[in-house]
Structures are given as C-alpha cells and as structure tokens.
Length: 576
Image: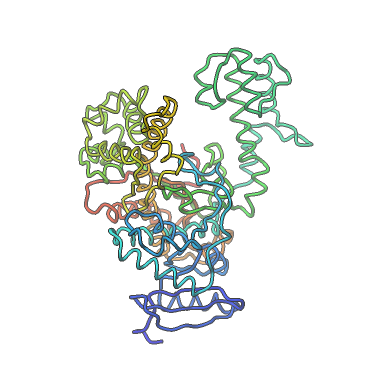
C-alpha cells in the first residue's frame, strides 16, 4: 500500500485466530482487508501506528488497548464504538429517524459501583446489562457507518465530532491510567492507618482508636451494646436519648447538640477510613508500588467518569501522603479552581462573570463586584444557582446573582424550566439528558386531571422540581466534563512529546509504555496528577497549564475566560 493509499481509519474485529482488519480512507471508503494472526497482531498494530497514525475503530477500548500497553505499544487516536454509540443514540442533535438509535446490540455499558459515582442524582440505573457490544469486524464497520451518518445528518455535526473524538480519547486515557498506575507507598499508607486508627488487632478486632470512639459513643447513649453500624438501630438509639435526626449523615448530626455527637462523628470518620481504604483495601488494590483503579469514562449520565473498582473517585485527603513519586521522579498535581462556574460563564457568554473569574478566585471576584458580601456567600449562592437550591441561605442570595449575572443565571434557569416541563437538555457539545421516565410523565399527566388528589398534585410538583434541578446542573456538569476531556487529551499529547529518559532513569513499575516518559497517573473531575522524571517536571507542569488554555479555546473560542490552576511539583500528592 503506497503513501497515497495510507488509511485514515483502521477497523478491527476479533476472529478465532486473531483479528480482521479493514482499512478505510478519509471518506471511510474501503481500501482493503486483511487478517492478522494473534501472535503477530501487536507488532502489526505497532507498525501501522508508526507508518500511518490512523484512527483505530474498535468495539471497546479496554478490550483492545490493555494488551497493547502491556507490550509497550501506545496509539494516538481511536474511535470507541460503544462509547460513541451511547452519545449518539441519546443526543437531541441526532435526527430521530437515525438508524444508530435502533442498533440495540451496541447499548452495552459497564457496571458502575454506586459508591464511586457521584453525585447520586446522576447514578446509572443498575440491573441486567448486555454482555457487551459485537466484536466482529462486520458489525464494527456497520456501526461505524451508522455513527458517521448520524453525525453528518445531525443539527450539530461539528459539536458531535468533537465530542466523540474527546470521549474516545478519554477511553484511551482511562486504560492508560490503569496500566501506568498511581505511585503508592504502601508503608506510608500502613503508617497513616496505624496513626489514625490504632494498631491492627489479632483476629480482626477493631483497631484501638476506633474501638475507643465506639465505647465513648455507647457511653453517651447509655447502651453498652448499641449497634453503631446499622443505621436503623443507631437511629433508634439516638432517638431514645433525644437526638431526633432522620439520618446519620455527618451534616445532619453536626447540627445537633448532645454529648454523643462528637464521638459518633469521630467513629463514623474512622470507620469509613477502615472500610473504604483500610488494610483490606491496601492488600487488594495496591501492588508493586502502584494503585491501579478501574476508571469508567462516561460512567455518569452527564459524561463524568465513574469507577467500577478501587474507589478512585474518592481518594481520602489523609492518604494523599501515600501517593509518592518513584526515586528520581516527581508528581505534578494540578486542579482547576471553580471549574463548573467558569464553564457556566463561557456557555452563557456572561462577560461579567468571566471578568470576576479572570486570573483569580472566582468567588472573591464576585465579592469584589458587590453582588454579595463574603466569599462564603458567593460560593453558597453560585452553587445554589447551579444545583437549584431555593431555600435557606441559597434562596436568599441567588436573586442577587440573577441581577449581577443575568446571562449565566438565565442559562441554568432555562435548563431547569425545560426539565420541569419534561424536556431534554444538552451540553455544549451535544450530550443530552435522559428523557423523563414513563412514571414521571404519568404522574404529571395525572396531576392535571380534574379528579386528581392533593397528594398527586404535590407529588407531581415535587418530581417536576427534582427534574428541573437535574437538568439545571446537567448542562453545566456535562460541559465541564467535556472541557476536562479536552484538557486530558491535549495534555496527553504534550507529555508524549517530551523526550524519554535513559533506561537507567526509568520507573519500571509504571509498565513498558510509561517507564521512561512523563505520563498521566490520576484524574478526578477537575484534578490531574502527572508522574514525571525530575528533569521534565517543569516542562510537565507547563504542559498542564498550556493544555488547560488550549481546551478552553477548543470549546469556547476566543471568549475571554481563563481556567485558573493550582499547579504543584512535589514528591507526594499531600496538599499543604
């Protein structure tokens, strides 16, 4: 095959002996076909990547890319059919008659642990899942053509092309994060557990400090046998001593005044650490100096990532000291200040809110504008506007923001009205919210009937408000997730362009694909951690900042908004 016939796309499909390969040109017209034996597949892909740098089309990124990374082979671009199908199937930009909507065999999605996917409002529905999308090449090619047609015929082809490219880049990055792992000092983790919880007891009893907190709780309850790990039983014990709470959440307990509250909060904190990230977690999830969680791109309906193992999205602050670079390497830790409010300013073209955010803490900028008196008020008001808080302090302060920033507040208010009316909203690039459930629609319809009861009317109004809060935040959280994908994808390329270090400076525990190269090691919504050779630390930190600026331009053009980063170069991820 000559240079003129170099493929732009290569579709892969599984066979009993290896893989079927279909090469396509820029217009996705077929150039030729081939079959590659399993034993030669990795080297064949590596050679094709080096010669043509195509975009690889496959049914599910982890099922192809994991083995390549284990062999030290990285690819630059892919098109993940499963993830892109989920976007196009539900996008309001795609024509209702598009065939891609009816390709139900591609509806497979990974399971997501509820404990790892936040906020709860956006949890995936659990239940029976398809076994997975088709892995043969003919099915992959047919779905690829359906997706191209859906995008081409949509009302936002440019937006959807960018979104599907970003989602597919995220699939590559998630697989790479697991392969490289997050550097983790198991001895430091053990020391932190002992200092916080007390020494482990033979036979699996509670550590000393946790047991002491439990004794103090039971003493305050006047019940030496009180069950502290069963919420119904604990609630009954609290009610008996006059603590009339409806839940045992930290926020509700903190509002109470009773001798049991302080030791109970301490017990819950220590118990959570032991169960979520204690010695059992350490033995299961940390090996050879690396924590390798399972990230799930698009695992939340807004497009945010989830985790199906390891609790990657809930890394406790007290354990960040255990995140430690290898000798001769450093961590670049960066997080974005007020990502979602900044994204809201850009979406709404609200130059006043953008000015409040420029080069500084956005909440402080709101205070300086005179909209509210304190930074805490600014935070409460803006988060209340994005999440639909209508009572208490938020309800009092949000009207002030509407006067100061009418475009931004109007955008989320409009999204809420659409949701309350049963409509669908979309993110900046075209990911759309789920339609209301049949039960929701039936409740709204029933409430309009003449014989509807007061209880039915009240329920319908409550459900409508709940859906309005969902759609209000969907557009902002989902667009922030799109910006983060663009940030990650750009940063991935910048890090890969830095020169590898000599073999003697390698970090072999990061695997053959990353042992000599600065690379992404962790991602959490608005935070990244890069593991880099010490000599590249400054360049890697600059790459983080430059990639953030590039992501802003990619999504929002020349709108005058910056994405303020806190970037640190350190040996550990522990914050000052």
